[in-house]
Length: 445
Image: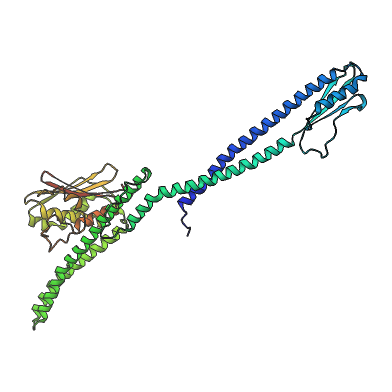
């Protein structure tokens, strides 16, 4: 596994590298500019000395004046040990040469030029003028080392300062880490204090706090779920235990034992249904998808569900009307279960003599919306977002608890998610509509 890198060291390292590159570029520019300046100065000096030598040569009128020329040139080169001159005439006759240096210089700049002989218009004197630039070269070498040392020292200083600034900048992040480490299940919903954080970290703090809120809600739901499961299981288990103990307290006839076993079987069926529903929700939460197969008519499927609930509808004195139709690839068994839960829920709360509407219609995303509407008590807005939570009941007194354990609408929401859709509910003007959307293609929307 790759070890996490240190942000402080990474920033300090790259800050040092960039500083060294920047200072190095400046140093190179300074070195090149200085070298070009020295070169221009040497060229100008050679040109100036060339003009002086030309002038001195033109002052002689005949070959007999050459000793005077040599004397003038000797006087001229006094104090100019870095200059060397070689003057030759016809047939490479040496006319003048400065004394050679004890050691040959390592850096010489030479120019060669011709001078028309003043005593003969057809004779040309050839001159070779050399300038020893060793002192300038040595100065450039020292300058190069000085600039290199300055660039490295500057990079080290900037890196050290950058490391200090990075550590200072990361202090609020360490404070966030301490706050996060102090979180526990008891205070998981407590938001982190991001007031001291940099502007760039504010979105991260906000998102993390939002995550804490969702985590706290999930934790509260889990605690509530555990309490609801215990409540739902306690009543039938207590009934089973009590009836069984009562049956064993004295001799019973076979018909009496049959009655006890029949009553216990009802409670066992209820417990089995509760466990199965919880297992189904668990699979849905783990991402299980619907097994789709062609369904020609959703209206026909809804009619089957209505026929199954015919006895309960007659007892509640309500009728059902199916409106709209569509088809596609769906899990028919799951849709029957979802519609059955919605219809059972609407039947329990519908006004006697009213009509329950089952609507099948397309939605804005290319999917299908299935909903069940009934006339009855209005559900206040505070309850609507929680209707699809497990074991949630608007009537906290848990009426209908003998037949309804509070997972019906949670199962509807799970079936909607398994079909790539979402549940919805609205309660306005005495009419409550609960339904869900399903995707025809299987993609979530």
